Amino acid sequence: MRFISNSCNAGSLKSFALASAFSLLISACGGGGGSTTPTPADTNTPADTTTPADTTTPADTTTPADTMKPVITLADSAAISIEQGSTFNAPSATATDDTDGDISSNIVVSNPVDANTAGTYEVTYNVSDSAGNAATAVTVSVTVNAVDTGDAGDTGNTSDSPLVGDWKIAPEAAALGVGPGLGDTSWWANGASDVTTRDCFFDDIFRFNADGSFENVMDGETWLESWQGAGTDTCGAPVAPHDGSAAAT
Image (tube, rainbow, N blue to C red; front, side, top):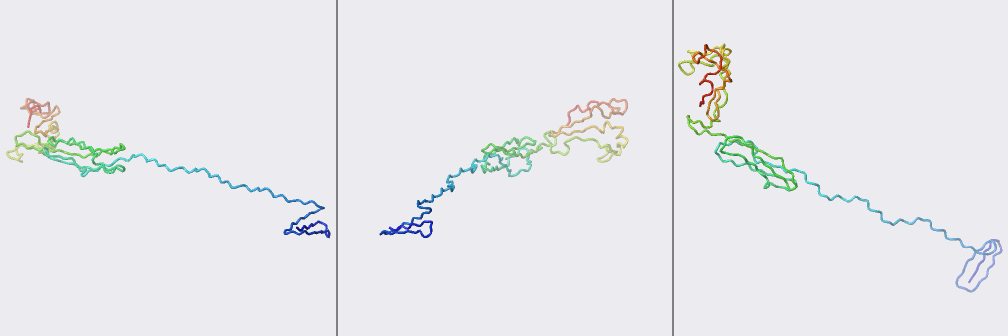
């Protein structure tokens, strides 16, 4: 072992040697005792290895409510006209829904058409999907036209006749006339002044009904002539049988 003493005073180095295989260096100052410098404390803040909390909002997997209405489509939505007594079949229809798909088989058809009775009817189509959403109802108009199958003396329905409706004498000269032949009014014809003098007649209604019947509607006053019991030709209360009370066809 070999020791070397190194003092702080120059020239005072002493040494001695021992037989050894290793050496130790000792340094001292100010007369002797050695001192060891302490290891400083580790002031480094250790790493935080704590796993942070997961604050991510989870995805909403809730299925949204079905609020869409199904849609009905008619094969033919145009108004329909048929003859009385014929066969009527309601037009076909389809229905689709955004969730249920094709729900045509669920369509409910309200068909009040009576093909044997003249009139206008409405055929209505409805459907709902599995969520209870009702479609907008679809309708188609159907008219059953009356058919006159009678002869000239029949009083059956004649609604297709151009005479059906209310008529009045045209308020003009020569609207009324009498003569020896069709279109000949040489015996007598009303003048323009008669439109005013006989205004109670020119406002009378001649009504031809669809069932073939006829009516005079005089509203309480019409033109009277002396042969009807009036003292002179004038306006007055209708006199039977020309007062509209008699049944006529």
